[in-house]
Image 1 (spheres, rainbow, N blue to C red):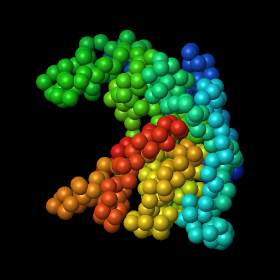
Image 2: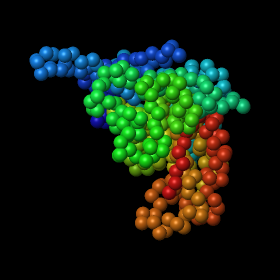
Image 3: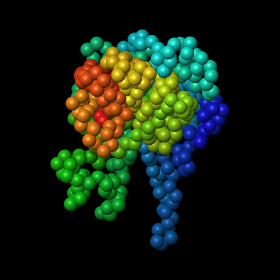
Image 4: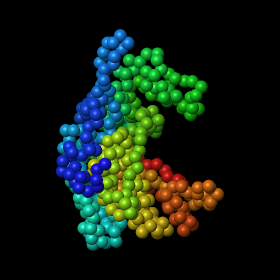
Length: 423
């Protein structure tokens, strides 16, 4: 594992020496280009297979296998960028070409965004810390104005899908989800182990007594080949989402839905007593190297804003957060001091940075809090417990629930996805 200080600094100066970017054995980076949008280039990892010897002693060469690759530019040996520079904006031109977003000044970064009382307090703390990724600076690619939807425009992938538009993001997803599915299907015979759908009990070709009832009532409709139109239709129908904030152009588009590949999330985050910006960026890069499809930053303590900025500017996968954690830090950990205005400001702050998905704990309602007293484990969600404490302190309804429409408006302006948190 990379040390959080000197070796990491060496890796930034010379990325080729960084273990988190070293190619995996018998693998190489390849790109598959789009047809609807010619500028789409989807990275994959091509694995060289050993030849097979049959029963007659003949040696049969095996074609290489291409697999889904989440490592982004960091997984390409030809990429010579550094953490301090940040990743290139893969989606920047796609976003601007739609002509429905505008750049604006954005909110000013305040000392409390990073958990400090004053600017002098932040500077004093920064001077004392070790490491080279300063909380007072940002990656080079962060030096830009944030984007938001123009008045009257909706910039979500859902809106485009419902309008019948196949975006570059959708074609990118179709290519990486397809994984040469149609070609492999031609090779399979009656042997069940050769059927790629053998683990999808709800598929039309493998109905049997063990099929879960949910699949019997709502059968999966997975085509032999995942096409851009199929991606669009699934998003439009509400069966899939594309977490892709317009302020995270470094992201390589991916999809989450019942008719697509299973996705893996990795949680990272510092705390009030441990970790650093360097270590959190390192965690993200290791997670994506080994296949994490999304990364959730659950940081608490100091330098939350700065840590998130360094992670986002270097992440090729969607980044998620729990905004109530940072909002709580801004009121020194006193849940009863939280307000809707403070939380709204935190949402906008994170959306401007490029966070792709939020967990919003709007599922904890005042009338439900007393019911937790008889639960064996009480409230098991940290965010849920924060909002429950606020509800009891003020004897008012959860402001995340009462301002739900306002939250949705903010999310739509930046194309942020979210899940509803409870207790």
